[in-house]
Image 1: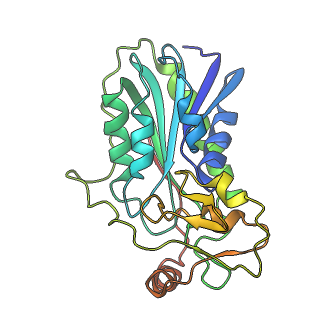
Image 2: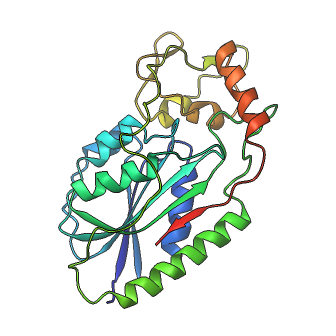
Image 3: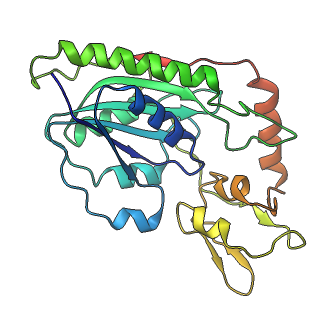
Length: 266
């Protein structure tokens, strides 16, 4: 079985999941890689044709052991007809819990047949200079693992003789899934002494929570605490001041400092 292209579909506020998927896609034996970035509100207006005889890599970060609700909502616009899928989640060195199983069940519902899955480690959204958690990951060793994963996918594809494949990929996780993140009550704030109102935080927000109205305003009910605004601010003007949020960062730094390796499911 030979394919000409791989299509990538992802939700990736801090670009970590995107980086992992790109590395996997580059290692798969195809001629072309096509991106469908569903991270930003402006991108979800695009019409995505149903996926047919192709390979699709679908990926998202893990938030508190689950898929981000907004990512699930955006993935639900996808349609497939027994299309082969590779499912990937990226977590911050704590655990991916039920997220990969949740993604498997979701893509099956949408008409895909998952033939491989993986949980890779990326720098935690709450990681800071003072409380690093998986800082700098995916690193060179992780990228090497993505290439080895891609080669295993190549080998598996060669053995497939028909699209009538059973949805029997075994994925770790539990159902019913663990509870989702509780409703958000805090957001990063602006250090007005450092902010030059460049608008970068507005551009990178995946939910459109940030706007400029006589200053930078963040709608708490829309913020998903992805920290894309914090990590992308060129002046480090977006900061976390909430004590409970900071306490979580310290706990993660203390308890999740032993390197975890990617987990592959084929």
